Length: 192
Ligand SMILES: C[S@@+](CC[C@H](N)C(=O)[O-])C[C@H]1O[C@@H](n2cnc3c(N)ncnc32)[C@H](O)[C@@H]1O
Image 1 (cartoon, rainbow, N blue to C red):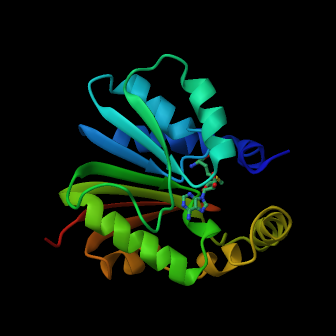
Image 2 (cartoon, rainbow, N blue to C red; image 1 turned 120 degrees about the vertical axis):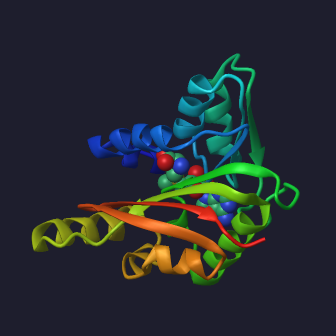
């Protein structure tokens, strides 16, 4: 089972992907850390007039994404590092990062967030989805176990971070919604 398959065992993940789609609109949309393109493909189908970019550091994931995309004309997959997003400053309307931030250790995550803030237009939208620490003891224990087995060590550190506060330090005003072990952070770039 690869990483992507692991996320698929949570039925909630599918629900959250659909929730993200309800929250966005725009001409140029980037799905950062796209994996095999699950969200990027949903967006491309829902917004045929928009250009969707799915960026990932893994060629292997992108190859799978490309196969899933078939002949969809409005989606382009890009192999790149989230710490150096190959777009001009202030050029994107929406950026989504779904289960990508926990993959990066602290400094790397900061550089990726700084890049997000750079390439997003002023008032451009951002949606982050990632794990969160459940309040329920048993759920917390099971999530920790899951993260220890399937995710990098630094994934645990993200559970203690208030992502809406972190986003603010990069000029992104955001609201964090908590949903058991998943959180959604919606925001927009407020600085120039
Ligand atoms: C758990 S998958 C999430 C995939 C997808 N967004 C989803 O919600 O199903 C995380 C992805 O982040 C990618 N990734 C990790 N570090 C990255 C980086 N520095 N730059 C770009 N992609 C990265 C991995 O290659 C992987 O495909």
